[in-house]
Length: 300
Length: 327
Image 1 (cartoon, each protein chain N blue to C red):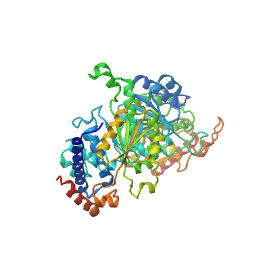
Image 2 (image 1 turned 120 degrees about the horizontal axis):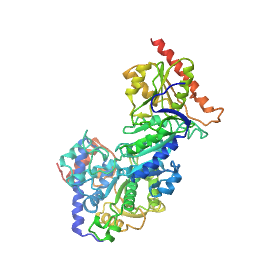
Image 3 (image 1 turned 90 degrees about the horizontal axis):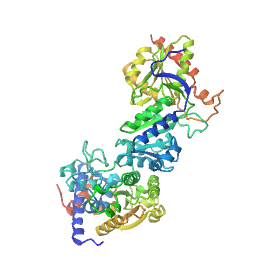
Image 4 (image 1 turned 135 degrees about the vertical axis):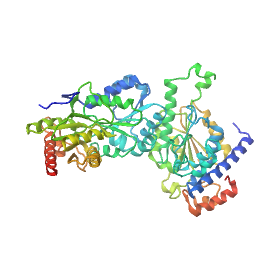
């Protein structure tokens, strides 16, 4: 299961490039959801640059793994990954928030190939992800893969889903009742092809998530809803990679999986971390951008 | 007796849900992509579905917001999910989920929504505001069939249409059979049951039946009144509405829902832009629904909301007076 150091170092470097790309996006209107974006970068890096079945040349590939960014205000991280994968030219980063740009303020499936879910209204992503996971099950049931479909041995075809669905949730989003409706639904339909990742950065817009509305004990909650739960440090790429591999291997156990990734809001930029900045605006945010540029390099 | 246009054959009362159920069975047999999304609120013909389509019934439980999200995802993968519920639960409760997860991406989700003020169900279930609230949502086609025949044809058309559609299964007394079996239903097309000279009643759903009764009452007073069935509230058939206004110069709208943002307002908008015409709206006037006793002799709700044929006839006469004053 151990990943070699070369891979981890390569992905760590990639995460820094994504951070620089995100800074470019924040600059267009001196505004952006900096906190959640910076906290989810390593997870996005591990998914898009190592783990996912995803073809940037064919973003509508029916067998691609689906990534549902339920906390869609942090879609800057995915935009950065799509740019680094070559789906969009680098200049697109400078059109973030602009009229007619594929990089809208909240993810929009309709105008951004590569995005699987139009989010923004919190709490809806896990239902959508559960629906995708269910449709994979239904397709396998109604239309099982035949010998002619693939050259792979049957046991591989039988013991892997056609695609997996990953859903990235915020911690404040767990306040939404719909998340727990979807959690019950996923357990009922035994969606072992569904993987939720909670970006647990402990802070919401108004203050500490657990003061606004306590979500703890969050691990016990997911367990009680019938999910398999793993807790990791969301900024340690080795742990992220290990967790993703582990949950992928457990396909067939009839249980949906959730990875609770402990993260730091606004990670990597000192004044964003101090302020637990959610939506950055104006000079306060630009101070952080300058610091980040010194650290991650200026991509422009 | 009044004469009627082609394809109209006034007959015995029949519940619209039968028509919806028949068409839904046929659609499921024809198209393997159709899925029934259940929210613990009996699907039409549920016994048949349980016996024949058990694999294609997705029971989501009493969790309508999640149900809408799941339906959106299934539609994005090429299935045709059909969500069945009371409008207030399946759609008003999940209003933002429908807006954000389904309509923004125009996913091919179908809704059967129960609404209306009839019955003993009480204020919570006798909602009248949901239908109008859906009218502001882009990308949603809204159909309110007048009888079981139209309900069957509308359901068939809904299942063939590519995009989100809602059919209102009105909570009302059983409407008359209005149309003959060869009635050509088209989404977005109104159908004139009778052209008339003095006024036109523009109605949808159960109120078409009351309009048909009102025509006979008014004929006794020497008035020739037309009836236009506007079953598709959105997109609305502007041509047919303007033609009716041109023909008769007096319009009465009738609907079993709030008169705010419903059929009456839609018709008023069309006419005030294209051909200003004296108009009287009949609907629930800015109040909640309620339960009441319905017996063959007496219908308390009909009296309360003034929806009967006699009430419609009064409105028609009032509108004709308006027209004469304008002249």
